[in-house]
Image (tube, rainbow, N blue to C red; front, top):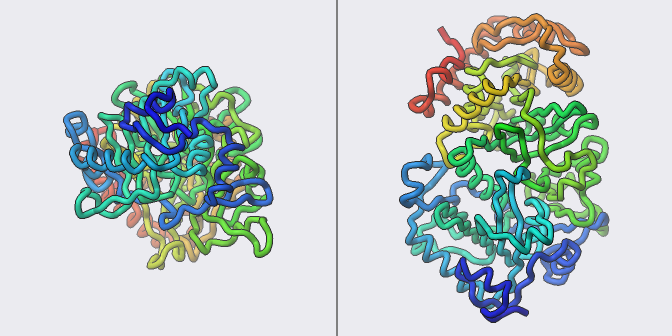
Amino acid sequence: MISDFSTSPLRQLSDIGVTKIKDLYWNLEPADLIEHVVVNGEGLLSDTGAVMADTGKFTGRAPKDRYIVKDNETENSIWWGDTNVPFSPEAFDVLHLKMIEYLADRRIYARDAYAGADPGFRLNLRIINTKAWHNLFCYNMFLRPTLEERNALQPDFTIICIPEFEADPQTDGTRQKNFVLLNLSKRIILIGGTAYAGEMKKSIFSVLNYLLPLKHQVLPMHCSANKGEDADTAIFFGLSGTGKTTLSTVPNRQLIGDDEHGWSDTGVFNFEGGCYAKVADLSRDQEPDIWGAIRFGAILENTRFIKNTREVDYGNKEVTPNTRTAYPIHFISNTAKPSIGDTPKNIFFLTADAFGVFPPISRLNTNQAMYHFISGYTAKVAGTEVGINEPQATFSACFGEAFLPLHPTTYAKLFGQKIEQQEVKVWLINTGWTGGAFGSGSRIKLRYTRAMISAALGGVLSEADFSIHNIFGFRFPNSCPRVPKEILDPRATWKDKQAYEQTARKVAEQFVGNFAKYADFATPDMLLGAPKLL
């Protein structure tokens, strides 16, 4: 189609070195992209009209193969280490050129989009894909500019994603054939050797985690957010399995977003224009909103059909347990338009404490909030992964360590400042076990968790009497409407009180051990939030 440099759309790609290609499709609508997906053999249509595509060898992110170019701009600002692996500018340039040359005889799907629903912090994007379903993914997951906005759009960052292109580890400086390279100075992201679409959205999240705190004092957050009828905004942090999506998607509150947000001086805003939800064992009864969103325009990753039908078998995990769907946020009916809320009144840290030592709800002071924000705790239970035979503590700094270019204490300081300035209440919600650890205790009932969150949002708990946990120091209410009083004090739910104390101290020791790697950069206020072991 478009192949010569004189064509206007191609001229817009010359800034990243693209001067010759075989075919170029720019900003196709979903229906057109879906037609290309089918014709190209990239995927199939389900009985609801959703596209079903496979991601190939990689069914999730490959964090060990994500690199950041280390140059004059980033050398002293990035938190270098296992999370952020340095890559040389010279090696980046070589790979960039190879990828550009690879595109010369390929079909390209280009898209203009942006991240950041608040116009004051918008990041303009240009995405170059070789797969039509990847371009549809970007249409769904990023924010969609109007035609007028597209015509004037100048990209702040460009993504070049070529799953078919593989690096040569011997000469290109990568660990494997797949790679994700972030060049924060040249504002280019290179992705190759993997068809897992989530790498694109998480790369932009990493970029925003770098730019927003340093340039705008905006806190980027790996969280969901919603708002009530009185426009009161609530934020929900939580690692996988803690109930973040379930607890933030409720009929009486509008969903702002389910995964990535910014917190400015004026409010909370979604970074994205869509949702990327897990669908393993999805059912209409348990998740009616997600079920209804999987329709024409949505994407399913790595799922399988029931034999001799086009009906998706959500219980089938033969490819991966990480089966997902990606759809525009407006496929969920009860969403905020635009995806913006006022400054938050309540923040919830969700943890599935499989040791059974945390109260089902606790109020944190600012010091504790910063400490637990950096800790990002939950626990895996036996059977969830090979080799896990008993509960295992899991920590992820700021509930999203894999996406933090800056040191976690940078985000925690900003978090603490905003809590103080905007007088936000911070709650720790245990969606895990009570009356004992996993295997002996029982899972806290969802209806009780919903009742406690509702009481916190409604201000009911502000009038409650509180007790103080003897080890972790946070306060927990002695009563809560529609919740049995006897489960609010975790120690009281254990028959063996000595065993409870021993287990609580064991968990506290793991917190202290985990926090040690951040302690050199932590402020005295953060350290005051630590559990007391003496």
